Length: 439
Ligand SMILES: Nc1nc2c(ncn2[C@@H]2O[C@H](COP(=O)(O)OP(=O)(O)O)[C@@H](O)[C@H]2O)c(=O)[nH]1
Ligand SMILES: [Mg+2]
Image (cartoon, rainbow, N blue to C red; front, side):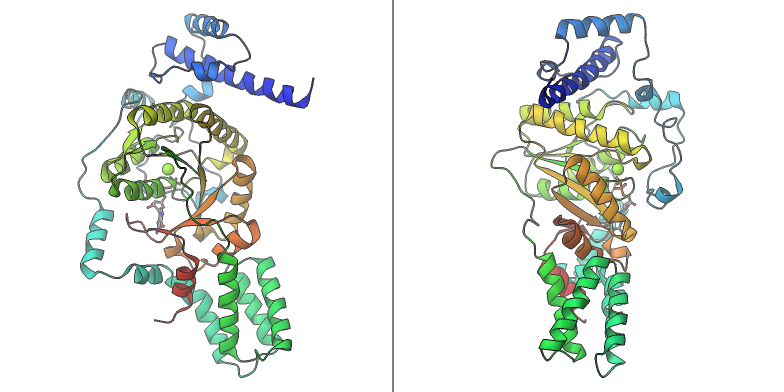
């Protein structure tokens, strides 16, 4: 059997397994998506009737199929291993609900949309205050990057101001500063190498000139093409958001959705993080805040079914934009990656060519760790762009350079705070200016 055929069969088996589970849920009267799964089942390895019979008999025997999916979110949420503990979000309420309460709460009709009229949140208050004091967008960016500026540019300035002449020792110290600012080891070394050459061949031995040289080099790296979101000619624009827990996926989705709703677009959010109990609620809160509908299923259900419903709903409602949230449990890495791949396949099946963007959210405060996350996700699901969050809380903002320069992935959006306005398009010129310019 040829490799292609084997691949096709394997895919058909996966779809069959998913379809079976789907029908079983339905047969048992659980809240399952009120959509037809035929489109996918057409590709199943067994004929649809057989799948249905299998599902019915499984249901009759009350066979707990995919027991892992049926556990309550609380039961399924083991403590994160220490290396992940630092990225656990602190804004989610502790999972105090019992399994029974969880079940009761979670029986929200599938496909149901949630628009919550909420009191203004701290983020909104913060925003209102920001408007009163009215800093320009550029000032906001500058102040968001202040820790990186102090740590990176500030150290560089101090080094240069204490030396008259650029010698080997200064370059060594400069290399250290570059590396510690997370612009990437390879990149720092290459930059120092080039700088040495430039010093030899050109009159570059004055500190002020060197700073300008580094600025231009960084700008050169960051100016790589493709840092804008690529929207297709026809709607809906489908964006899948991936990343480990706590990096800011849901927050980014909320902020991004707001941009579109403010421009008068109908936005659908798909609650694809069905793993954590509070994840869908958190997305609904954002949906309510920004005026976007949310498609969710009960906690623990198959995220591919959520995305299936969301895309069908987007088609029938003629939504302009769909943004899919996903789970980020890195401690079960293999399963997560398989789940994300499946979600992508389902999207492409329902609306060919989707998702148009797979945005990987990375937390700038994690520094070099962000690079290894990017490699893992990119290999598994093919990342089209990076959202770098929490630049406001770190001196490691230089990581942008490592991401673009070493991974070759475009940074498309940056997060510089928790407020709704704090998600910005990544503009290399503006970014470098905000980083290097003294106030
Ligand atoms: N300071 C700051 N906090 C952020 C930013 N983006 C997200 N956060 C916070 O990071 C925490 C985790 O975010 P969340 O969206 O729940 O992460 P998820 O688990 O990836 O969905 C929340 O407290 C957010 O408010 C940002 O750009 N700056
Ligand atoms: Mg989330």
